[in-house]
Length: 343
Image (cartoon, rainbow, N blue to C red; front, side, top):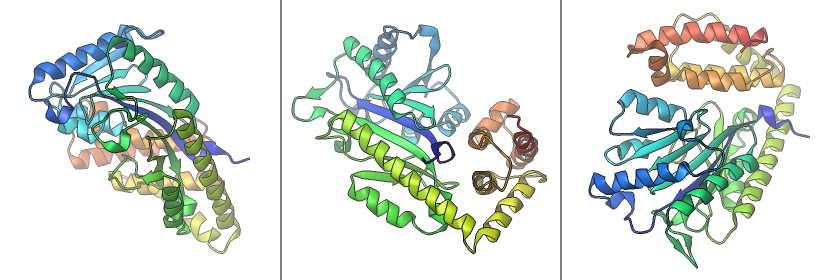
């Protein structure tokens, strides 16, 4: 059986909803209606079983700094579009940052749950519970034939987007990703980069998600995404074995160990260098060339070392060079700890 822990990074389930009686966010003229929508959402959350008011924090995009907004985006809690709509938009995020509800992005609500690993069922159950309670507090725009009404036609129907972030270095190195993309597209799914639509695949990371939401049930969407991710993971695992047994094995091992050498002895490190080198180190750990038992710790490290997160950790706005120095010192220390069994 395929070890998904070294391939699947995270799971996201997102529901798109709009409130009856209000125009879509792109046509909202004033802040009055926007704030009414925020109040409806926060009031509705207080009625969700198992969720207390103090578990959620409201972030008005117009009231937070650009750095804080960037940090939320780096942590995949909000989208670039939410920041663009900062005059009317907000986000409600729970304490452990597994649940994020974007308000007045493209739709009135973008409810999402993000969990580590392959957790489609758990993420869906969490969002279904919250969505059901919210629907008791407000009336969602719904049509008997079209389902939930959304700003973009591609979200009509269930409004459900199920996404899995996968680490696919072997398929990428061996030039098989174009074939994977075509196969997935024929099934009505899509392959995107780290930050979703329009973004590039960084560090061999790809989002696999459903494209179709109309004419299918939520359960059918979850099963299709799960089946495709499992198949892609099997192909990735097979290609990893081919690399280890093939003529390129020594070159790949050398590249992984060289990347490790840089990350554990550098004096400055840019974001792009970290993305590239950490992906090689993670691949080396997956192939058994490098002793890092918990490869997910590398993913966490990369997120922590994004520019806005570094500024937040330092407690001030650092220059690009200062961030590169901070990143190098932090990464060197933590990679060594990972190899010794620490965090």
